[in-house]
Structure formats: structure tokens, C-alpha cells
Length: 405
Ligand SMILES: Cc1cc2nc3c(=O)[nH]c(=O)nc-3n(C[C@H](O)[C@H](O)[C@H](O)COP(=O)(O)OP(=O)(O)OC[C@H]3O[C@@H](n4cnc5c(N)ncnc54)[C@H](O)[C@@H]3O)c2cc1C
Image 1 (cartoon, rainbow, N blue to C red):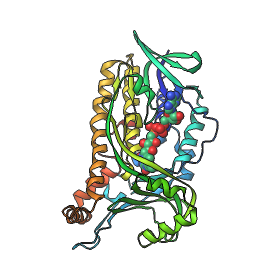
Image 2: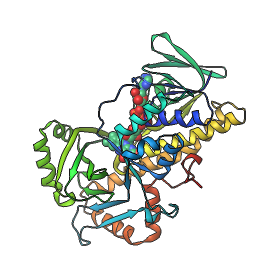
Image 3: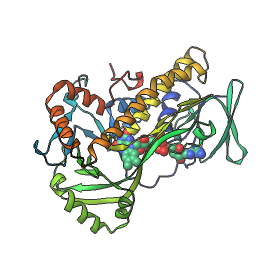
Image 4: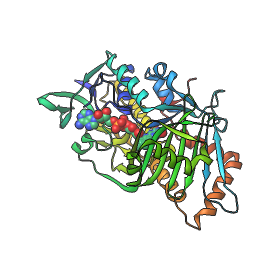
């Protein structure tokens, strides 16, 4: 009998397996992928905030990641609309955070492929984790004191708690009968890496246009990952065009903001949706990461929010096991849900609000958002609050995410 059976070895499930194994729990990790095979190159990049980096460090991943991590020194927001305030902008840096232990960084930029490769290698080499991969989760049954987890080809295993870290369409969430709510933005984000002609100085820059944001996120070697929001269909169509045409369109539209850019690697379009599970727990089931919520990625909060789920659930389960209690117990799961659901929901709705206010040409909203950026740039307490929000450091952080003493 395992303490935890985790379905999904993506960034959240893989990190949860590593963290809980280190905390002494017995862990089964199930994934449909072959974890020993390199994955196809992913065009996403993650802004990993300080608390998430601390969790990755506890989970034994940062040594393998440091060579690929680009320091994130600041975050700049610029409004594309011209009005009486000019082109208002606000820049937040690690200096706006009150508790950076003398290291004024907001976090690090990591390419998705490097993060997943480091996780796959670490779980494969970890004797505290029993791996079932490639194996498909097919169903579950709650029994007295445990849950039986069914895999393809008639295999099964027993655990005190089943964790669904199996992404947006979460088969675990469906098997537990948990519903979702949300909306389709009718937009997609075009994502690709580019080489830059101007030094990025570790600043993630976001230009808010009426169609949606255009962002350049700093990568090693004066490259950047770009996220370009467009109407559904347009981003997908652009991704199909020859690279010379994409470069021409990109530079015609954004060279003034970001300097000349040239696509460097594969391009892909991701549809944008807001989807929130109506509960993060079921009987002997907990959801983390995208299985619990998928949000607008416009401020890079999705995975960071998932990492908070990981750290909170690891803390709750480890506390239970240390006290000789059941990690799948209903009260323990209630503690996890009441810790994470309000914060996760607030972050998802906050990203939705930013999208509604900034991604339009409404004559009433234009001066208001210009004013908001101008005030944010000049008022120190507001700057600190926004920098904390951007670095996901607001609220009570789980122990595994706190700055080392
Ligand atoms: C364009 C874009 C940019 C983004 N940028 C950022 C950013 O800068 N910062 C940030 O914090 N977030 C960002 N996000 C959000 C981030 O990508 C997600 O929050 C994150 O990848 C979710 O990770 P996860 O581990 O929860 O799920 P996933 O990565 O989806 O992993 C799910 C795993 O479950 C496995 N699985 C699924 N079904 C089964 C089954 N039946 N049996 C066995 N295994 C199964 C899959 O093989 C997979 O390994 C971005 C998202 C997008 C679309």
C-alpha cells in the first residue's frame, strides 16, 4: 500500500513525487509517457518565481537546472494605447520585494523542455519512487481505508490518497466526478523562441495591445521566448506559415517595442481557456496543477500556482504521516482545499480581470489603465504589493516554498 499514487509526471506531479519521497512518504508515480525517452521540444517557457525555485531546490532539481535558468530581474508592463499619459508603463524588480535575502531577483526563466527533462531524470533515478510508465490510468474505486487505482492491461495498485496531476483534461478528476467551470477566451497564444538584437537585461516585457498582450521573456544567450496573443485561428494560421513570413510580420508589428527578432526553433499556438475544478478534493482524491485549474498565462502564474498546490499538499500529507495519521483522511484533504482553493481561484480570476481590462480598446478603460500603470510605477507600497503578486509571494506560503533561513 502506497501513501500516495500520483497520476501525471508533468512539472507538478513529478515535483510532488520527488518532494514527498524526500519527506519519507511511499510514492507511486504513473504516467502515460515513457519517462526515459526525450520529449519533443516544447515552445513554452516558465517564469519560475522564488518560492517555486525553493520548492524545486528541496526536490533536488536545481543543480540540474541552474545551467539552463536565466535570472529574471524585472517585469515591465507597457500600454500600447496612446492617450494623455503618453505610453504609460510600470517596471517591477526584485528590489520591490521586501524579503529577498540580499538577492534582488524575481525568479528564473526556464524552458519547459529543460524542466521536464530534469524531472524525468530525477524521478527515474529515485529509489523512493515506484514508477508505472508508460502506463495509462483507467479508473479508481474507493474502498475502506484506501483507493484502488486501475491501470491499463488489468494492472492495479492501492494507495491512501490518489493525486490527479494529469493536466487540463484530468482523467482522475473525471473518475472522481468533479466538475469544472470556466470560459473559452476565443484567443490563442503564439509561442516561439527568438534571437534578439537588443540586450534583454533579464527583464520580461509585456506590451498590452487591444487584441491581447505581446510578451518577450528573457532566455539565456540574448534570446527570448515570445508569447503573442491573437484571436483563435489567427495564431494557429501564423504558426503554419514559412518562418521568413512570420519574422516579417513580427518585426513589422513589434520591432519598435522589442528590437529586431528572428525565430529560433519550433513555433506553436496554444488555445486559451479559463477552467477551474469546482472542488480540489474528492473521497481519497486531491487535484493539483492544471487538473485543478487552467488560467490565462498572461502573467506566468499557472505553473507557479500549481507548485503552491504541490508544496501545500506535500506539507499536509507529511504532517499526517509523521503523526501516524492517514494522508487520504477527509479532514486532511479539507485542510489542503481550504489552503489552496481560495488563493488559486483568486489568481485565476485576477488574470482574467487583467485580460478583460487590458486587452481591449474601450474608450472608458483606456485612461483608467494608463492611470493604473502610472500610479503603480510611482507608489512604493503598491509596487511592493504588485511585485509580491507577480512573484506569487502573497498569502501564507507552504514551508517548502519559503526562503531558506
Ligand atoms: C503558452 C503557455 C505559456 C505558459 N507560461 C507559463 C509561465 O510562464 N509560468 C507558469 O507558471 N505557467 C505557465 N503556463 C502554465 C503551465 O504550462 C501549466 O500550468 C503546467 O504545464 C501544468 O503542469 P501540470 O503538471 O499540472 O500538467 P501537465 O504538464 O499537463 O502534465 C500532465 C501529465 O499527466 C499525464 N497524463 C495525462 N493523462 C494521463 C493518464 N490517463 N494516465 C497517465 N498519465 C496521464 C501526461 O502524460 C502528463 O505528463 C503556460 C501555459 C501555456 C499554454
